[in-house]
Length: 382
Ligand SMILES: *Cc1c(COP(=O)(O)O)cnc(C)c1O
Image 1 (cartoon, protein in one colour):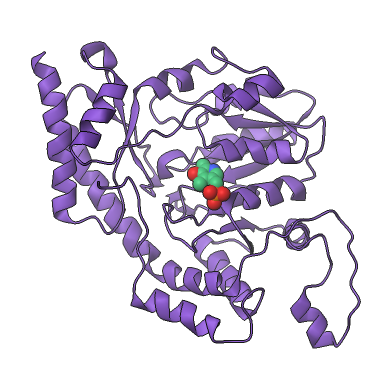
Image 2 (spheres, rainbow, N blue to C red; image 1 turned 180 degrees about the horizontal axis):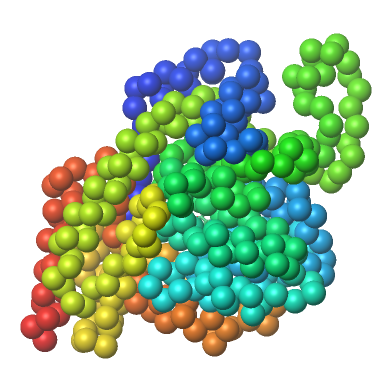
């Protein structure tokens, strides 16, 4: 089965990790700050804070901006659960907003309608690797004094109006899970130009303690103070060594992802029952996932059947995502449910994610195209 996404790990990556395993620092050593600096440089931001996963990155961002009970954060329904969960971790209320039907990205006009006196922030999600309209979102946020957060888990390496993702929102959170654009096994990073936010997040990832063990050792001191309720959200040194090695290859991987997406676009242009997501002009697409929308009105099979038919062909299709407000937790805790975000709900019924990752061979790509053609042509004849 060809998976929808997978990591690329080479000999240089393995050597980088081994080197750290043989050194003195397994965690919070020199590689963490080296990786943070490289990540900040890559994303054109002043500060990068590395943590143990993307969910922790989002949580740290919610802590940094001071989300607390009573605060609302606007978040799109079409995302992974942890975008919204990070708001709830801090006692905040996620306010789900609908998406654009063609891009499935947060709709800035609909964001405006959701703003109340309790709104503190807007969290945009660069769904599929396409950056949101940060110019429009910035205007909306500034008019109401809101902080703009990017869940950029899909879009590392992408850009908008020539500016790299990571420099587009006040805080930008990344995931380094193996299916994401690059990996540290598990991992996450938050970028920001605000040194106070960065300092709060460094505190937060280390139990809320003001110094780390390396700093105390350097000072020859045992004393430390816990000044906030933080977590152990640290990332290890060997993960950051892997991250440094992976980051060097990222631009080439993005280029390969774009090439595969281009091949899919050309192949599916003639199949009227398939609509790829719309790509806006003036963006550099990260091509994290390749999502098609099925024209179910002109198909006799449902999405579930097409899903099964493609799986039977060895194509590991997937569905991203079940709208978050439809999950039982959110229905029960926040009273959300069907009808709240109709565009996301309708899209959910007809989306499929096809395999897309840099190490796919030309054969893999043509296998996907052939299988999709087979399943859909069969449909066309019905
Ligand atoms: C992967 C992902 C996350 C969570 O990242 P983890 O590293 O798995 O914790 C959050 N939001 C989105 C949109 C994601 O795709």
